[in-house]
Length: 341
Image 1 (spheres, one colour):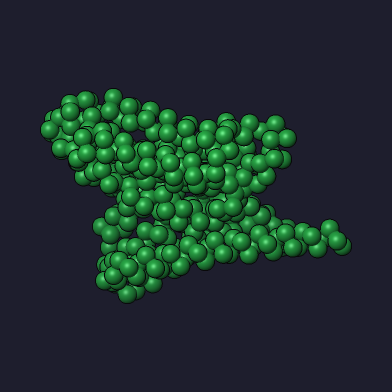
Image 2: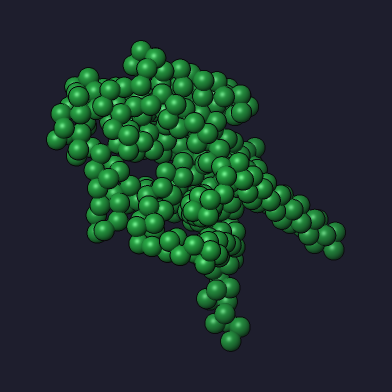
């Protein structure tokens, strides 16, 4: 019996970070059903579809921020990169540039920001808070400048209604197998980056520098290159969200993406990704994004004020980080006890 348990749930729980991930999903289920009992509209098919679509933005941002947090860093530029991506893509399309070239230019701009962040933190050893705070202001400035300090016209005015409809349907309004494309985009992105983080050498290096950067360097890990990779992933995910917001509105908004860097932190931390680095699974980030969205949706449906929503989510984030600190301190204490024994 013991062996069977060990090869089943016990073996699953032995995976580092799996316990936190499953806790996030358990919390998601509980919160969903609690709000559903209060207001049965929560269980409606349309609300569930809207939940998945809205959650996708938090999931994408969470993936990017989780990659960076696992390296022991943070990316404050995420929200501004979202805004920059929204404005660059929408500006180009509203001026007649076809959709695909506009998306490619937007992606290149974001990757440049990711590389810059990685170099500043990894090569020049700037504190990530300061480095990405700087690029946060720069990229938000680009978002304002790119269309002359004003929001863009409707993208259909430049590329035509048919092309604009295709763009908007692909990223936001269209459905595949009855589910909004936004969710499928987020899910495919999640699967790709989950595989990279959990099954490749690059993923192992990301965890290594988050656990102990000096030990990782002595083991032959290219810390600069790995840090750049993490920040580029963050920039790519932010760009996708920027395109989703442009498709949702059909235009570019200079303030798009405000506070999204914090949404990414919340999704990751609630899902068990440690802000101290070296621990956490993207599976948990998926659950964390779900918890965030279900809380937001449920509180909205029961008429809770926006201030109360922020307080509830803020308390959950603080408690999640506090739990991580307690667990880490407990692990260190037990480890010292074993050595002393």
